[in-house]
Image 1 (tube, rainbow, N blue to C red):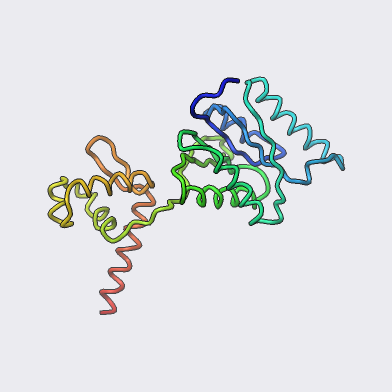
Image 2 (image 1 turned 90 degrees about the vertical axis):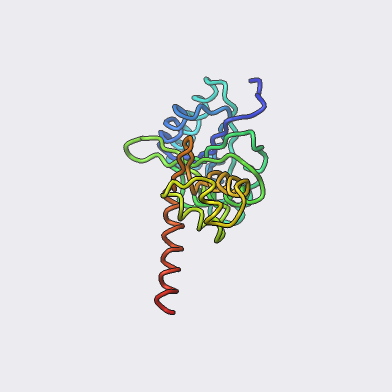
Length: 227
């Protein structure tokens, strides 16, 4: 396989029924699969192990037919921090040009949580393109962003409070007391970190953006009541 300047990488925790990996593949079209496995699965020991190995080989064989690179990584799921650091090192190997999908649908409970921790940690220090997905029982595919690694400041919050009013940049400049280029920069940053969406000239709060505004409104109202 000839690799392009950027890759689509699916990092997936293994499950005995690996449908979540195949469902994600139909939508994401992986160029490299990083399969997260428990260290317990390194050697065949029981009848259950035989079944696990059969399923692992099914996943690997499926991707080999697609000419997709597969990397198997074994984790000590009982040591959460050791596992998180190891996963963070894996994610850190990729660049901002790559598209990374963290498939959180299968495996032991600690592994998906560790993947989120690792992805959030790396994205705090590196501009990296990460989406997450959890495949529900109806087998739908709806990727979502990692938890934001940027928290809006007071100016951002005031800007977000005014978004539902669909004010112009000139109106926002008067309200905030800062120049339009700075407002545009802040809007782009809020969009990048998932607090707002921009469609043409229309700007809207996302669910997490509305939550951030609600939290700050609650704090403002609480302070007003105390005073």
